[in-house]
Image (cartoon, rainbow, N blue to C red; front, top):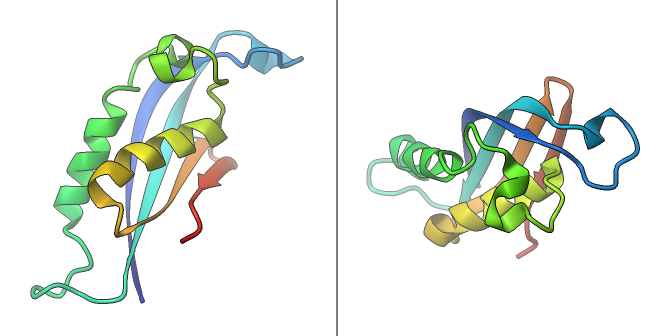
Length: 121
């Protein structure tokens, strides 16, 4: 089995509704997003997937989140924009193009705090 990953960052603000603490107030993060792909076989060029293609797709997903107030986006108006929910959202968006290869998505809110989402086969 082969696994590859791409890594990108975006900046955005959010607040956690119903949270009792600092994160209930509006604040921002430079999020780090890692998307992992798995393949049992390689293509004719010896790649599980083209880094350029998967990175471009990830950038397209993240441009809809970058420099936004996430709570105001349609997918997060009623869902708290936690790292967990962001990971699931990015997984779903990336899955539209890479369902067969997509393995998991990790969203880092800080250098020491991350959430990962994947779906069991």
